Length: 283
Image 1: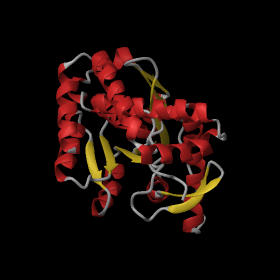
Image 2: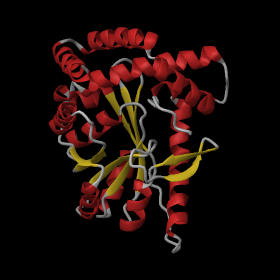
Image 3: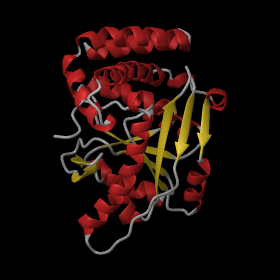
Image 4: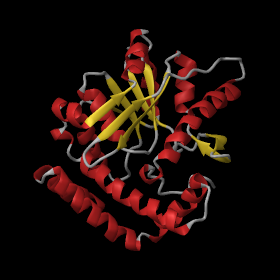
């Protein structure tokens, strides 16, 4: 059923104007919101923590925004074949791109650190479309048809996907080849994350970005593509972060993780209605 929905969504997204697609996406999001009880419970739990309040109106406002923005995210995702340089120049403001270029000039590649905020998939597509050698670590979908559909969408713009698991070893070669490696760091899907502080509470989060940074010396650059007006975005590249090898492997990894989690926290606080955490982050 979900596969059919995605196929229909792609068909609509490619045949109608963007604003019309967004209107349809908003209607679908509002309908789904009315009966997505589990998602709403989880979002309420997460929003109480990141907003620091029990204000029901504020939580509901942001929760509705999350559903609507995620629906628009899917519309954008299925329109990757329409993502042109003209669209990027006219609708996406790049902020701090010099941080990426300086990192690439050092020859060690760079780790683009992302979160489930804004439109991370579109961020990858934009970088690849601009000519950057771009690889992204992705979690394979259980449904092989959906997995193939998503892989095709990423490949349209030149993004090379690396699956979580045995393929992760190839990340060393990616960075040695002076490529960009994108890693989403706010949800642990591997079961091998570390317990760290996130919004002042313990949470188990993935350590991949910190691990590859300490092993290769590739700088970590937090990067977020954020929705502004209809059809417009800000693509922000923060200054590179670095840790140190003291010999205490776990402590060193946690140290750099806490550094970049503070950056992620800032963007989630600023854009709570664009953080798509439909499962409880804190257990």
